Length: 222
Image (cartoon, rainbow, N blue to C red; front, top):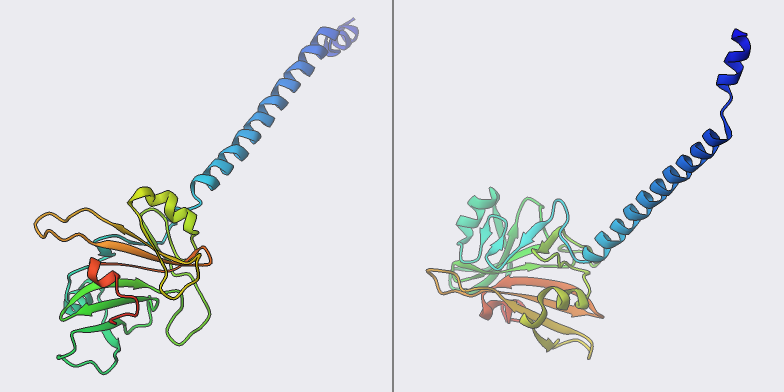
């Protein structure tokens, strides 16, 4: 009797089987829904972040890049970076030269160049290749809106909208442009800096931040 009772109790009834099947289907539906939601969320993140900053990015703003601010002297920039800087364009500059370029001497961030006017940094350039190299590479620098070298012109337009001043690129084709956006006026100084993007074939090839007069120069100090 004890054995027979055990067998009877251990066998699931038809109702139990239906309930288990329904519960399994419900769990499967939940699992499918969660998987679908995760995939959809990933897709949404991808779409939203077509232009976005990434971990490790240095952020170029209207004020400057990292600890280096527009308006600093080279000596102040060296202290801020804890690194020495060297003139490279022209490399034989003298105190009489009003405009020249400089970059770090330690080999770090070689695609970042600083334009100096008289004694102050007036522009920071993000270049698409390192000195002495012709191969295009993307430095880990972006704007606060996530625009970087290689971003599409459409992304620039989406991020900055009607604030952009768009002009034909002086040396490009009909589809190549410069896109400039200006920031707010800095309290106390009355200074209003801008960021200019150069595009070739629909992609950002280089960009720079600085004073309106400095970023408008097409060929460096020229």
